[in-house]
Image 1 (cartoon, rainbow, N blue to C red):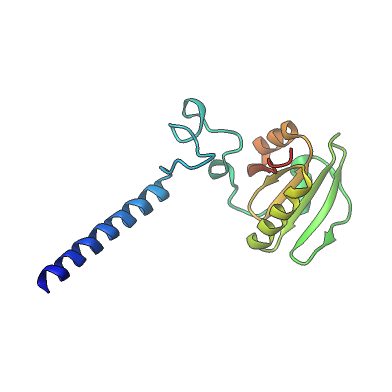
Image 2 (cartoon, rainbow, N blue to C red):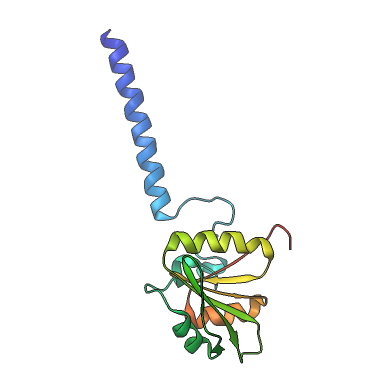
Length: 155
């Protein structure tokens, strides 16, 4: 009986050690799953990639009006959804839609659903800019922060 209890304790200790190690590596960003950054933590040569969400997410949410000012466009009156406000943005030469969200969960659901329709999304802290040009969104990202997302299955 002593032997069975000892081996069970050893086994539990090893499992616990493996779980702790996995958690530490995950928090440290050492996982190498699909789409993981290359060595150096950011991509080529250790330089931050423009669409690296961890390095570009602003700490404060932005309203549709603040986004319009930052983008330099005129907006229509915001339309209200269940968890968001949305306005078209004109005057930039690009067709953009600006959104602000009440909750991060509502934003994630909206972005995930919308990606099925195509387009490029600049996703920040409870705000999103939707457009069609990845290059234009990369330029906006340099000013606003956020992460670039788009559906890669059908395009």
